[in-house]
Amino acid sequence: MTAIAPIRVLVAKVGLDGHDRGARVVARALRDGGMDVIYTGLHRTPGEVVAAALEEDVDVLGISLLSGAHMTLVPRILELLREARADDIAVVVGGVIPDEDVEALGALGVADVVLQDTPPDEVVRRVRAAVATRAR
Image (cartoon, rainbow, N blue to C red):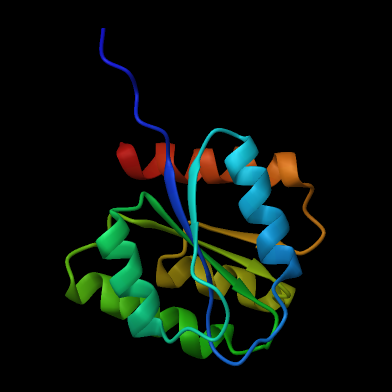
């Protein structure tokens, strides 16, 4: 019998955002939910995040943003993933995202947008759903 590998998630803080408490809470919830989680730390560039996602062979790239730069940074990350032919990695964005940008991020190719008040068990469920959707 073949064991199913756990979902691999890279949690990334991109740009100048200096607060990572929420990202750490999410990383722990995902780990407690049975996923392999890699956390990049603060102040990463889109290039660093995509390189880490490729190196770690992740299923999901979780981007945590509080700075308001999501409509600049996320499109660049998606572009770099496409260039690397790694657009099979599900991208989930979380943090402080205005409601009017949620649909725009989805149109760009983001699998899900998880807002800051989402309970940890719901985050786990939605990351699993994002992976299941990509696997089809």
